[in-house]
Amino acid sequence: MSESKQIVVVGLGYVGLPLALALAGEFPTVGFDSDPVRIEQLVDGFDRNLEIESQLLSKNNLSFSSDESVLDGAEMVVVTVPTPVTDDKRPDLSMLERASAMVGRSLERNPVRNSVPIIVYESTTYPGCTEEFCGPIIAQESGLQLGIDFLLGYSPERTNFGDAEHTLESITKVVSGQTDYASEKIAEVYGKIAKAGVHRASGIKVAEAAKVIENVQRDLNIALFNEAAMIFDRMGINSASVFEAAGTKWNFQRYQPGLVGGHCIPVDPYYLTYAAEQVSYDAKVILAGRRFNEEMVNLVADKVTTMIESTGRLASESSVLVLGQTFKANVADFRNSKAKTLYSILLGSCRSVDSYDPYEDTSLSNDHLFESDVKYDAVILAVGHGQFITSARKIVDLVESNGVLVDLADVFAPEIISNSDVNFWKL
Image (cartoon, rainbow, N blue to C red; front, top):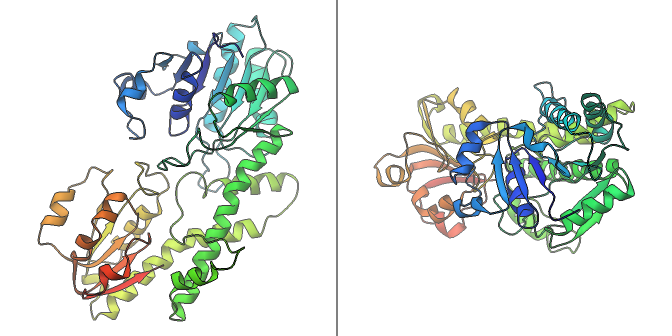
């Protein structure tokens, strides 16, 4: 890859924007997004996801555009568009399809180049999707021959946004290419930004499968700990104490039970089970874990109402506060948030339900929340934002005498609630 040649990153969300910034440190890079408002904001130095600081958006080698002609002549295009699931839990490839068609149109406009262009996908896919779904779309739109006139690659995104430790630069980058040449060039590019190094998978399908199995494993393990926590709770056993004791064994791996939302862990399993169907295999274990994690929010809601009524109150006459509405701590991402689902469920069974999230524009504010005299029959800490961790004692004070405090984020240390008049429960 020539350092004078342009790279285009398609899709400037949580994955694409940090990637474009990292690549711009080594190559002239264009960040493309079909949303012109998003582009205007980035040009003005504002990332609405609150992940990238303003000064970092003005890198000399990085420009932004919503004009697809910026793809023309690019030596490498990296596609990072979202790949969610449909309402019936099937892969939604509509954005991947549109992005691939756009790449094809660009190649059709510029069929003659000094080098063979490489199209790399980072979006979650099922094994075979890049070569059997995306590639043919590019070929049809461009009129060029796949594997000769343009080459494909796949490099699964692994960035854990909201996590300052596990970043794009600090995580080993898996790369793969349709040919040895493509694999070498992709590894060369990513090797410039992945300080932890690159792992060259033996094929694109291997890299695609690695992506989905990483999150399937997490989903299954969290499901195990969620189910165990609910069983131990019925037995009157503190699950955290159980996990701590079990953790003294050298090969025990601990996971934190809780609500599983977002766009990776709850989504990737369905991409793998879809692929399994294509080879006439009915996945059982994967879907069992997925079903339990989906059901977890209902089990928590039932637990909350049961605890409220155990205090002598009626849930239908009680006030509830849900703290946190994003799908994970310290991010401004509300997609597929189970905290939001919990809020909606409780709305149907309690007299009043308020919610507060520092990343959400609501009538509540941090100052109003902690400085008012309003108290709640039940307070649920659903997401462990840093702001809530530092305000743990103030959160306890929001609960009415003999009220309910629920910790779904493992935030409250025993000493914080030891002298309080609350009925406390944590997963």
